[in-house]
Length: 169
Image (cartoon, rainbow, N blue to C red; front, side, top):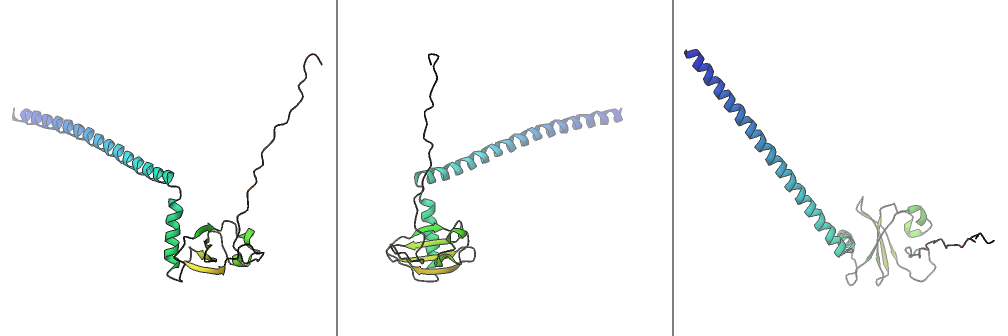
């Protein structure tokens, strides 16, 4: 009699623990899903905010990059403080190799152009070194001038008329 009572208690406790285990597993899974949803919403909100900032002020990234570069370069040399430089990036050094200013340039180098101070600075972010400093010669045919912007011509296809044959022809 005692053994059957003990066995019954064992079964009751086992069933109770299995029930509790299933309940805890469901709750844990629900909490995990909730955390996953809220973290996804948080990440989406963060990236949407970043997108809106860039959309509202597209020059923010270049302005931040100019500030960062001028801060770094000002540790090595005095920079003009009365103007904001124009920033350019070397993307194809082969096109620029004929100009003296760009002989040592590499793709990814940054050029700070101070138009009023007539100064151009070639800086390499990967090594944090100033590669070249040259006077900016605007309007002369010198090879030392920094690259000038060239207009980009867009080719568009002009529609041509083709004669249409009618049944009367």
